[in-house]
Amino acid sequence: MAALMLFGHCGFFALGAETSIRFNRDIRPILTEHCFACHGPDSASREAELRLDQRDAAINAGAIAPGKPDESEMIARIFAADADEIMPPPKAHKPLNDSQKKLLREWIAAGAPYEPHWSLIAPSRPELPPVKKTGWVRNPIDAFILAKLEAASLEPAPEADRRTLIRRLYLDAIGLPPPVEEVERFVSDPSPRAYEELVEQVMALPQWGEHRARYWLDAARYGDTHGIHFDNYREMYSYRDWVIAAFNRNQPFDQFTVEQLAGDLLHEPTLDQLIATGFNRCNITTNEGGTIPEENLVLYTRDRTETT
Image 1 (cartoon, rainbow, N blue to C red):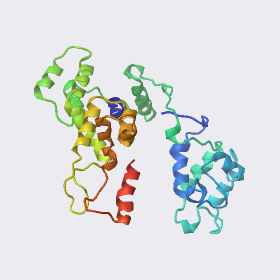
Image 2: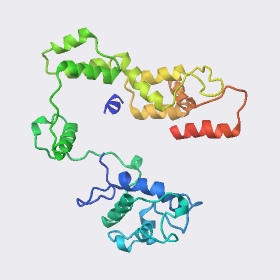
Image 3: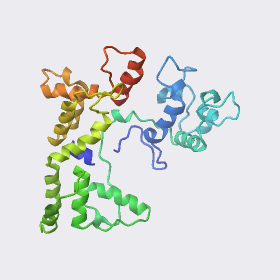
Image 4: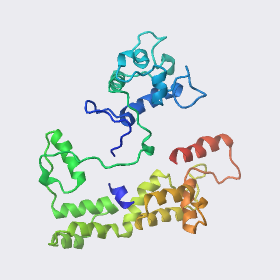
């Protein structure tokens, strides 16, 4: 999990070399924002029996003719001048801009490839891009960085000296500057693995988990108070300490996630796994002897659902 926090190429219906448009990155956000409300997965709100979230359905309905934008009803509608014909309709107050229309047209011209939701695509390693300064590349990530730099006619920055490296590492890893004696020890260390060993040393510090956990706890909306009304103290520190310990023991991310979402539903859960489910209680709560239904829906349930 530590590696994940420090630092995909996925294909389903691959686009050819003639275009760099990706469905999940470029097209899905447009359709989600402007089209799926009336032509998406919700049958209760669907109009004209048209689904644009499924490729076969969109093709069978005539909305999309792969490779033939001029024969696609979608293109005709989004470029229409008549207020009764244009999509999205004016009453939706979600007009497409020129660049979005152009992108949809180019996507259909390229075959209208769809991709499953990113969460359903198994990660795979992409091929490394070719670069000119091969000697600069020390690991696969460098190859991708250098390829972008060379494409923009830029040169990599000079290698940082050791004083700069140790300062950057400490600030990134634990949020604190390095002790003076550690700086001097690292600067004078002749070992070619000095930096790698320093990284291991810093990540073994208890402050590593504390600093990493701070970002996660912010995302989980952790707070030591209820967050509403009197905003008085609530005992949530055991969940906070569990998150810190999880980072410090480098717990696998899948376990880290499952235990927070449903640790109490595991077979014979441990006390730690029960504490992990404190994630589900990080939302705003009230300590009054009751709850207002509307407040529960709008403040508590929505907040918990969106964060999960």
